[in-house]
Length: 352
Ligand SMILES: Nc1ncnc2c1ncn2[C@@H]1O[C@H](COP(=O)(O)OP(=O)(O)OP(=O)(O)O)[C@@H](O)[C@H]1O
Ligand SMILES: [Mg+2]
Image 1 (cartoon, helix red, strand yellow):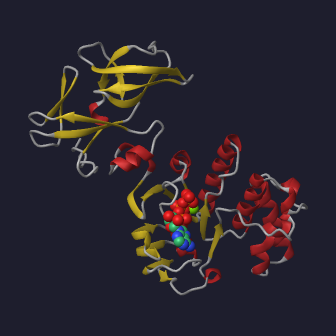
Image 2 (tube, rainbow, N blue to C red; image 1 turned 120 degrees about the vertical axis):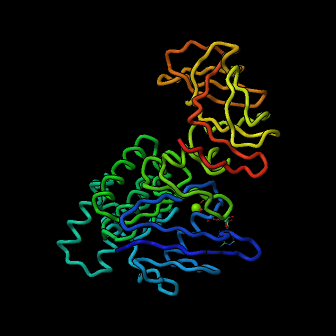
Image 3 (cartoon, helix red, strand yellow; image 1 turned 90 degrees about the vertical axis):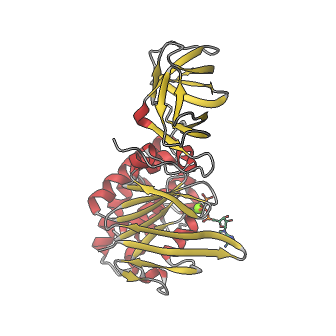
């Protein structure tokens, strides 16, 4: 078993708390992404799991054994670094073979594994070259191939696809998912790219300012963000947040009254996914002033305002809305997230 348990990890650099108290369990064979903006502590957490950094307090266990105090090489894991460290004095072949050589694998196994990993990452044609004759993206693929070649039980990857162009990145993403799923490798994958995290992960841990704000399946995190930060970070366009007055526990959306979890008065934030709307005639629909209409081919993206607050919504490509129009929207009430204006936290979803 190669489950990973991260228990109340804190890490301070001087007076700065890079990790404030992080707990997270990754099941055997699971693919979990650490997703969050630059500086939120993703690499620090990964380095602590790998043993390259010591936690200030807290515990990490792999396969139900604490690894605190164990050297990185004794933790039974492979890692791909953010800066794709490849060895400049070794050919690509020897770079990919490195972990296997350390394990004193037989030449035949080394050859077979190197060829397999190189094939997956499309670097077969570079095996004789040295890293200084490769592009950044090619070097990055060498680093991923090196980690995969040892068929590790636990794989830690830090932004492994960041230097690839969009098309290659999409292709590598699919390849990685296929190979890791079939090998049952427990994987922690660091990224700040939410589409990548959504596409690859069994679960996503959304990090922000040294804490994990939410852990859940991609669909769960997308549909039921626990906080305003998560809703705004995940999804393209991000979730819309519209502050609305509450009366008798309800808000008005055009002629419709929507029940909210708020007490009778005050204000509430309506969290709305851009695609959870359809056109409705005014005045029944909720009024939106469209500033810009962008036909994207697959859909129509509208940027404008509702109650003078900025919003982005998505309609079917066939709808004819133009920049400058005022339109009515019917909201899909089942897809609304209600949030507290004070705490930015979501109210628990109403029972369906
Ligand atoms: N050795 C260090 N000394 C002091 N501060 C550090 C050190 N390493 C990291 N930090 C700080 O800790 C915070 C978290 O850094 P970390 O590298 O984990 O971020 P990250 O989420 O991986 O960001 P990115 O997406 O940019 O790679 C940052 O504010 C960073 O400046
Ligand atoms: Mg990082």
